[in-house]
Image (cartoon, rainbow, N blue to C red):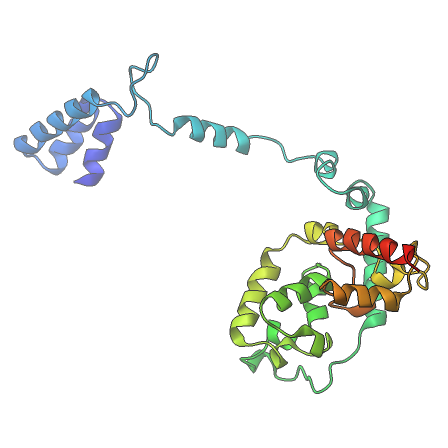
Length: 259
């Protein structure tokens, strides 16, 4: 019955009456269909000046979505305009992009070290395989986000990251619920936004012994971070959040003024 009634709301009754008669043959049913159509015509979806016929209330949104789907895909130039300058250059230069990817691959190969006690034999049968079997640095690399971002989130989840090595599988020091929260976080994190949120230099590179502009040594900067609760998830190799970075620079300049 529903399959027959619906067309009567969308086209003249005369067009569906033969169909109704052939399937039902009941005069009472036909009368009810006529009454339903009259009621439908008297109650339009939305009656406003200039829209006396009535249209679906979401018709404007439907038309807008349809028009959006008809657009051509964005050009590389359009995409690049929404990216940071260091990432935009890759969008417009294939050679630079390939060079950057090669350097990342070589860097990962140089820094690779086997995890003690971990074996991939029988991985397909291991119920514990997956993210818990990887280290924080491996997870960061797999999702193309800074390892500082992963470790900072782990700290927010209650993991005492200062007592654990980034080279150990997270299942060794994270609870099941913490691992699930971490997985949700890395899956939804924007890699470019995460990288842009961090300073360009590590704490060591900022220090005087690291060749930076800061007048204090790396040890002194570490002490300042501890005193003012600025998290150093990777020690002196940490790239700080930009806000923390600016705060540390200001603290260092004030400290140096009293030396």
